[in-house]
Length: 141
Image 1 (tube, rainbow, N blue to C red):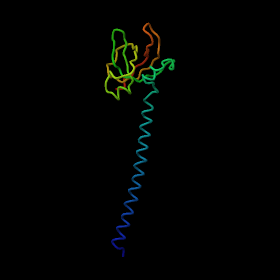
Image 2: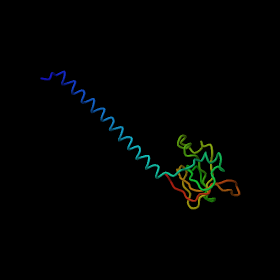
Image 3: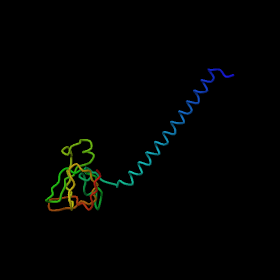
Image 4: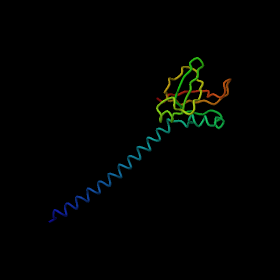
């Protein structure tokens, strides 16, 4: 006959083993979910450059690139928006705390301030200096 103490010890061992097994299953399913989420995000999100990186050395980005930016101001009459680095906007929460404001020429309707964008285009020189000429604009939010 098994004593109550032996039964409690045996039951405790089973509970511990189940707990350890559950922890491994949880870690494995969490890692798998994160891996799946990362691959989904990577497929939707293009390789991009931030405004501050482009502003520091615009000649380092010849040809077409994708810029991740937030609209700070727009000038409908000239078809130009001023964009800021999305990281600065996300940390500050305001449009006036940015280090760099980059002019972007966009054909068509201009997005509203505070809109997060992926802008495909390239740096060009116009009569006012360097400007980012957009060929495609995609709203993120």
